[in-house]
Amino acid sequence: MATERVLIGESHIKAAVKIAQSGQEPPGKIHIYSDARTQGLRLVVQKNKASWVVKYREWSKVVGYAWPEDERPLKTASAARELVPFVKGILDEDPLQLEPFLVARHNSRDNKAAIAEMRPVLTTWTIRECFAHFIDARTAEGAKKPIKALYVEELNRTLRRPEMSKIVDEPAALLKRGQLEKIRDDVEQNSGVSPSLKALSNVKNVMTYCCTHQSGKSGLDHKDMWWNLVMSDKQVKARTRKPELRDIAKTLVLSSEYLHKPLPGRLDGKRGVRPNVFAAFSWLVLTCQRANAGLSLLRADFYPDDRDEGWYLAAWDEGVMKAGKTHVLPIPPRAAQHLLPLLEAAKNSDSKWAFASERGTKDKDIHVNRSAPLALIGRLAAKNAKTKGGKEVAVDLLAENSIAYWTPHDLRRALTDTMDAAGIPGGSSAILAHEIKLSERLGMDSMSEAQRAEWQSQRVAKITRLAYGNPQHLELKKRSMKAWSDAVLDALEAAQVPEAVDLKAAA
Image 1 (cartoon, rainbow, N blue to C red):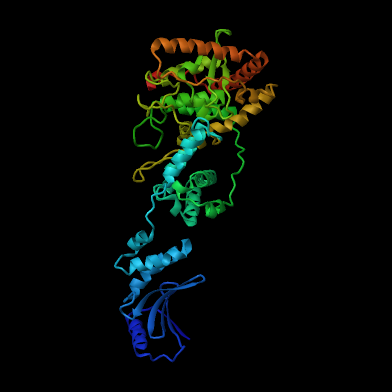
Image 2 (image 1 turned 135 degrees about the vertical axis):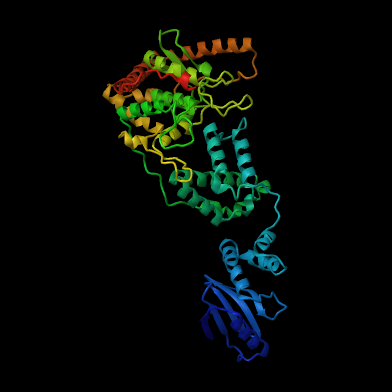
């Protein structure tokens, strides 16, 4: 066997064809031209044939011929080189698909058209349809393992990821392991380890459910549940951030300053902080609730406590809270007076939500998204600055003011320290725990004004009774909320900021 490593050109092809035509090579002898430009491409002369061969890993695949000219002809080196990446990709994903590809390719299709033609036409569910079925089935009444709104939101967020855009409307049965691995890696590179792990887990959960419950419609076969073999060797590092009260107060100060003006370095002329987002952010700071649940507060469920002057009660139904139980939180007078102007400024007369989103409409009434308070801090820290032609120079206001970066979720660790310092070791659990049951679904949308007023009156009475049904529990909550909110508001006073920010002017 003679092998020459050359940049295969017209002269080498002519020489190979001449040898193949004449049969000049002795029986059993092979002459190989190995291409110096494209790794794995070879022109092999043997048994009266000049064959283009792709050698890749353990495979050596004939993809065409320089001779004979009527059998899968490839007349030029450039045409052979163009085939190589497609052949290698097919061998990576499914070697059995190479022959259909070559048939299509040599029937006057270009490489991409041949790839498309070799794929079977499937009428089974797409990835998007699999997600839709999973959500519908697991949220249906009587579902064996029902999922909550937060997980539904997480699933939809996975579907919307740009890394998923190329596969969501393709049949789930055609998804390949390499594609899922690439999505995992791309999400990690673009968004971090935690979003990557969530996206991978969500796809795997949905495919497993559809395979085991709707194999025929999904096209997924339980004999080859390959997606369960796709793993990640990364893990999410435990968060240890714990903002100081001073930093929390200074962040509130900075936020209020940019209610009326753009952030420094931004050229769009828009104010840096929206009033409704500032109100939502302040609410989360003073209540320490999880962002999505905390902002899912109905306007009607924040009202004065008629059993304790100056105090307010806030309530959330069990379907909203992570623990699956209704949560009633007492708001101290001082905190309530600080929050009321913010809630008023954030109010939308057409919305049922205490923190209505500016993107909401009459047909789609939504509250401020949980990502908005996080984005607020990110904007102050110039983490999400978009420059225009290099002219904008976003300023990291947190660093400029010696504030360590933090997120609303980090408040929980600060809350624990404050409770310990106040001599209320169980205080943080009292504020965050969800221990009161209220089996009552919300249904105000279809009620008349009179019905709604009567329903609200009865609901307030019921929530209040439940809140006071365990006096020791409510007393612990009140002590804890007063200690935390006083600590935050004292820090605000130390920062020389009025307790109530005039958001009406900003709005």
